[in-house]
Amino acid sequence: MLNTLKNRLEQGYRTTKYPNEKIELPSRYRGRPQVNKDAPAEVIAKCADACPQNAIDASRKLIDMGRCVFCGTCERISKGEFISFTQDFEISVSEKQHLLTDGRLPSLAEHSKQHFKKLFGRSLQLRQVSAGGCNACEADLNVLATPFFDLARFGINFVASPRHADGIVVTGPISKNMKTALLQTYEATPSPKVVIAVGSCALTGGPFRGSPEINEGLDGLLPVDLFIPGCPPHPLTNLHALLTFFK
Image 1 (cartoon, rainbow, N blue to C red):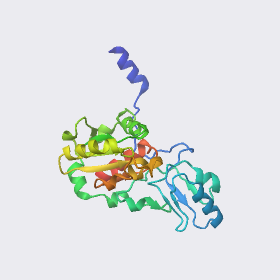
Image 2 (tube, rainbow, N blue to C red):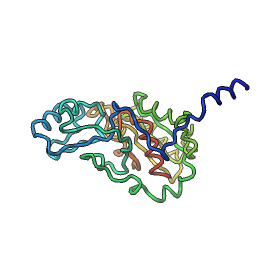
Image 3 (cartoon, rainbow, N blue to C red):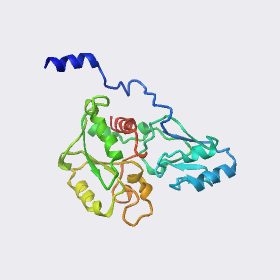
Image 4 (cartoon, one colour):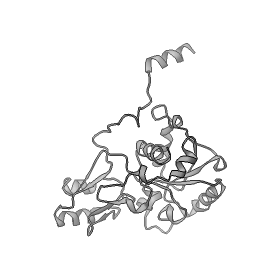
């Protein structure tokens, strides 16, 4: 016990002060993409052809954050002349159409549903479903329970049973083998309930898009209330989305 108290005093207070204080992420972090619509047409075409996810709409000069895996290929090819990635991690949206962007995003707070805030603002219990994911999105959700992020201080927790949950958080491309389990988990969650899609796989199929073994987008199976893009989304992206949408 004395050693525990000693360690606690030595380590001090480690929990982040976000959202009360802004956090600066490392310069190599790729967050919200910024599109320069005045870039030369040949540069735009080159970026669109090289994108492994076909996330760039060259004709409208937009990028689909739902498909994007934030690999940075477009930024490297254009040397930032067409697309550059900012350090802004607050990139979640409540409507899938808003993921197709030139870098401007609607305020998530303004688009959140007020009855959700009333229902879940003080306590939100979530059941996470890994529907065939690689464990990257799952790991960055799990880390929210660590002392640094301390998700529970906001009244948000992940629970073991959907019957104890207010909603489900889905990661992965939703393989055929996981589809039934996912739908049963959704049905077992009592109403009113919320559905949150996390990561490019859950949003659009991610790198597996086009495969007959997956469902391309959770919204094709269930009514999705919150879309959190990324591959995987940064823990702060998840935290910002949950706090802004429900609190």
